[in-house]
Length: 317
Image 1 (cartoon, rainbow, N blue to C red):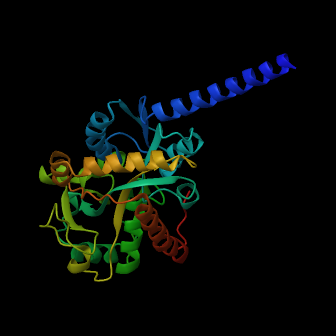
Image 2: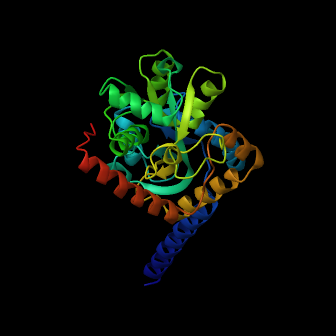
């Protein structure tokens, strides 16, 4: 009998010890405790890549951990998104995504934070000899299908902004898809395409240097970072409005505590004067907000663009 009692005590003590150890580990394993990987689903040099290279250095300082940016372009962001969906739900593999992300993928991810919701810039090659939105519309009507506009891929914000422009203006322009805004801008500079609806951080340096010409911004109100540019709405098309968002996502089922931690620290970074200055200098308007607010923005945006895709029978490959 004494032996059985001692055995029970031993088992009980062992279980209590295991329980204590697990609890102590959980309390001590504060996120992040190792390097974090952020997947950019577009090539280097594009708007998404540029934005994250502004955000990650101060975020790395807050976390005291290295942040590795990994470019995985393909299928309008789907290749990178699928990699994050399959990743462990621990917060150590994240995705920075844009309006381009297909609904079937964005609905599987956990929204963390809206980083920016900025207008795109309607930019043209100087070789086009056009100086206003009205002149562009007139040229497109006179030459249906001959003016070529580039995008970062089918279904991307740059693509849908162009399709919305075509629909509202009643013009026909040829869509030329690329694997990112970086390669598209290279061809715009080379004269292989004529027009782009692109993130300001991608095109404004070339506009400032005189290599490209900016006609307007796509938002309903003028951009606070480039207020000298009119909106497409005030320049020619009163009902036109389009904004491209950039935000951070985690794999599905990532713990809420981890989501909250990342969101809180992103908020801190977006409030840093040097970060705000660098973003605004590149035409990027800092945003922020809770994961729930970001999720609601994504949902509203999906409804808007899904309607356009159905009405115009736009093929998203």
